[in-house]
Length: 280
Image (cartoon, rainbow, N blue to C red; front, side):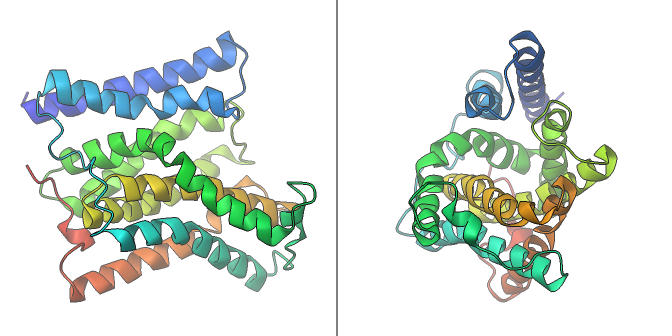
């Protein structure tokens, strides 16, 4: 077995065994809810822990290509896109729901979460949350997008993103059976969730490659969870839409964004999705 293969296998073993073991222990051994953020932290950081262990002690390749530098000056557009993108996808998702007759535009729920705080102020406050929580979402991105994605199929960047997205989705599957999310039809729900994560991984990988830093992808991941998912659930959940519908509706917006990036990449080679590849 090559050094790369040994590193990848060890990374996956630690990520899955550690995360799934903690989920089961927390839910059935400690009686903790997986909706609780404190319960989520250990398994969310498991991919980062696995990547650090592999880089340091298994392959001994170090952290030269880990993308830990911020590159704020050269990658500010990536940071801006990572920050605003989830909000724009929320708008596209709600617009699609309205066009399909699934939602009558009503933004009053934005004023209900924090008593006395108007909806516009809540939205401004919410947009600060991903920035603050970016270090927490680094745990997954440092592992999946930063370590696994460029190594799983070197030289085949687009396929490697698809495989990474699939593995990342499967890693989340226990959450659908342990009270974190409930799909009316689990098989269909998991298929929708997998599709969503495949498109997310394309976007996260693009940010990682274009910025040469893991931090824009971590910011976007935080925004996907704390802005896109929260606002879609808050605004559309009251219309009687179930978890499956709330998972499916954001996918067209993600897909169109991926298509746009692919088309723009043909005109500007740097940052093109097809150029995403391991640099060493």
